[in-house]
Image (cartoon, rainbow, N blue to C red; front, top):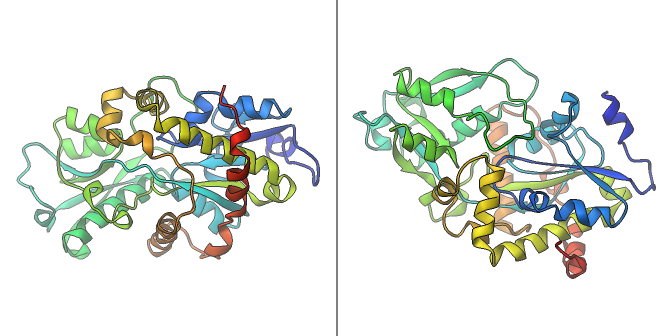
Length: 353
């Protein structure tokens, strides 16, 4: 075990002096709250330091973004790693879920004779496969989910297309500056050079794809039923290790209370939200508006609504069916509404400064 992992494990019934957070480089309520230093400031008032997992110099700590192996840690972001970690036995709890709709598009080359999903019959669909690793292949889960959803929506049989692996390097997710590596670059190159006929891209990557002359043939985000818009990105669970919830339920409630206040702030500050998300996703504001829509500032409420929970359950079932996780787990036990209820009761105590 990493030295950092040993030192930060909270002792039973002892108030921790430091906790950890991580969020994906996509729009999240936690991302806004940490970018504005509201989370850090709130816990500092209570003598607790909030550290970023992705900013650590220790790779074992950074990998907790995927493994959820670090005691005293919160995570908000894409659903593949937390489902995978739970299936491996990490005793985490889902204490809230957010959902930010985004562009989910199947792209072809601009000069392609493919114009609809039906035209994909007999074609090569590219899906990344990262270098050998014991971490879950998030990019592959994302691409396969998007392509299979597109096929299903148009009634195109899975066995009528050919899925082609596109070799990709392993991700090492770190805190980044205003520029970051585009993880869609490798599948885009495979599309442009003719290795494959179509790929799936979601979120801010859609703006880069359009700029490179790629053409979308379907946007899954246009589906009215949210359960047809499921992706590796949404719903986004907010998770914490169960021991922290047992030992320090007030800390978990306070974390969520800051997120609830952040959501309230976001609803009345649309431009500032776009600016913040541009920084969080290392892109420009025009791309944020294109990828996430003009109403993105309304999308940051942590909740455990029936639709959000059912969406997360279906993602778990998808990852199990497609072999991204080997073991099922008690999904209902994974969800705990009590911390969010407590957070609602104390959120008016939170001052965003």
